[in-house]
Length: 523
Image 1 (cartoon, rainbow, N blue to C red):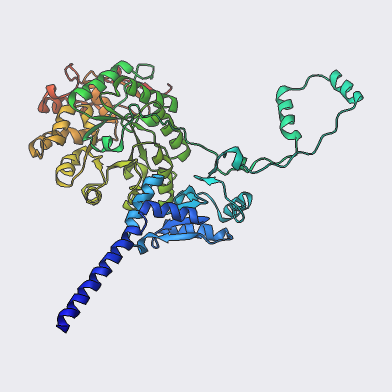
Image 2 (cartoon, rainbow, N blue to C red):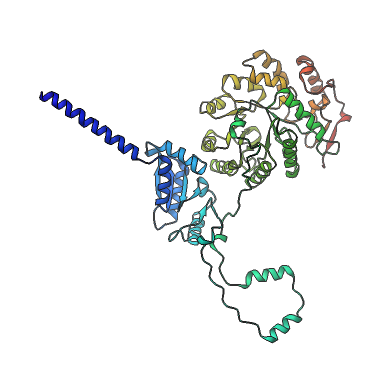
């Protein structure tokens, strides 16, 4: 009896404990509520991970400020709900990465908080904002104009005495002043201080549209299997041959290509002015944007140029951007991350890794650092199968950048597809290679063409091939010249082996004479 009673008491106690725990769990805030309440309760909040080097830098930057109150740090790796809080951060600020910094309820940013500010700049910035005494006016590293009720008060200018009658007469007889000089005088006449909202380290606002008409999601880009790095044909004076270009795009669409890279390496974007570049992107969107995805190569080794070109590209309607890492003037790992973070907020983005051209690999740690951005569509990877598998195992979309490896990358290593040069010539066969399962026979058939296309730096062979097929005029912008005669003869044999019917255009492949080729040095 005593034992039975003891068991009943134990069961009752366990039940009571379970009910209490359930009640406590239901009362605990959701991750989203936790973020909002934490941000509102503290002057400075840093969502961090203790092992993250970028988080350490952000915390160190704020430590240098010697704030009146220490930042409140939430170490997500020390919490069981850390992953859920990151999901909540993604909903609130559009980023899942850490660190994420909030100042007086406003989102300041992530690792970009400190990437271009020295400690002395940070301290000076804090003094000007009176961050140690009152609400800072920070939002996204910029001081934005606040509602009038929240703007800092300006000091009233010293009263100016009324001019005498003699002074008025002299002023009326004086010659008219230069309008721009008069404007300058007006600006400097008062001694009042400018509003703090006019003090900024970076007053650049993104040129973005909120319209959603024809907007493409990142998911729309990651579903593409065959993307052609399309060639840009020229008129005899070196300007774009838009008729030949339009014909080539139509042949890509008919052959099954789902996207085109405009102004990439193959399209000779590096030989274009930015005006030409953006015009060609806009033309492609205007003529073909409802039938094929237009991905503009708006990358640059200058972050300023990359930002500006990407803004313009999305403004004229491109569906996604292709971005390379800064080349020649190479940067650090942190510099690469900051470069990509500057352009990722603008729209769907493919990162392009081609160390043979840039002389610098984009290592996996860079891709992992930016993989949480909603606009990160994936990577065009030219390093090889093992790198591709490394990313696909982590759920990152990858396009092979090597035609001769794309079959195995797709079917053996999990690549999404290919960004292809060969599809300029044989889009239908490349579509089959990406969609119809493993086909070693077709792959072997195409390998001689793929090898030939890269016998010299791309796009030299492609320029030669399209001219031999009669699809583009034999006009080349220097420094590109055609392949030598023996290689032109070899191409005709490759066409015969694969079958002329599989290539773009209707004319018979022929061997070009040297005197037919036009080389343009000024255009």
